[in-house]
Figure 1 (cartoon, one colour):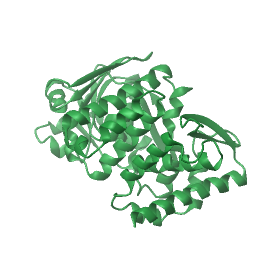
Figure 2 (figure 1 turned 45 degrees about the vertical axis):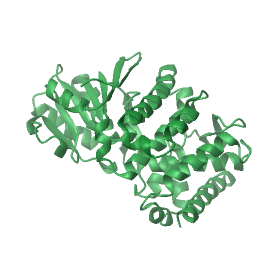
Figure 3 (figure 1 turned 180 degrees about the horizontal axis):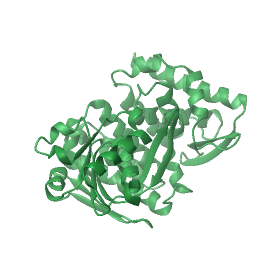
Figure 4 (figure 1 turned 90 degrees about the vertical axis):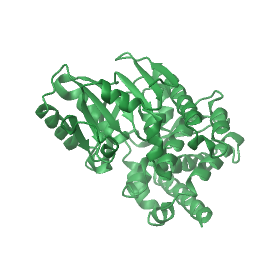
Length: 366
């Protein structure tokens, strides 16, 4: 199968190619003799795949940990994988995180490739080479950088996704495009107008390509997350707190969407941005249009409290000693990184911001 789009990601560790198109997953599986780490829920889509080469991973948040990595590594050894073997990961972000860490650790590192099966994985996490694992109550506290040999984005998988999963991907895609100071955000909104993008494979591929081309500029300029790439954490500090406080009833991409709304409200609260600034308003309007129709979001929001969100917010690994690290808006509506003191007053303001967003969305949902 030929790809509709291709892009090369340049890395000091290892450069790699990303291909976007239809039928790429099956072509890769038929062409390679690799150990396959696959989302257990996706295995049914490959009934012809040799089960002997497969290592199934349950794609649950509580499986994204070192214990799962250890079990994958044990299974790789049982299958006879050596330092010249290759690993092919097929699944969403959880499978990617586990497979990345396992490939980087097994016999001090073997080659691996990735085929994302979620829109979120396709538009965002598939490039950048990062793994992130949870340890105990601490989300994404362990990880490393270990780029793949290549990434194969097969848009056929999008037909298997529920509306919630598509929304997750759209929240991450618009986040990336918004982080750019160029025309990408306007281009994204133009592509997203109407529902045709999600049912048109070519338009969907164009959107995925736009998101990845935009992210490419960040990760190539700041490979190890020390500068401009940190702007891609937009929505994530609140988002991770919302995920944890909801006991992961609210999925990652949806939580990031909520986190972007919180960042907008917080920026206005601190006068970082003028209320109603047009660029910010366009983003908020679009994100709300994604979140309000979601089945189940109302119940999850009703069950949460600002106190629970604040508890999870405090534990985010990006914070400094005695201060909170935030990605917020400046007066032009662009993103910037700021630190605010972890005082009682600021904590109360953060809790109030979440409560305002929660109540506003619940009103719109009803």
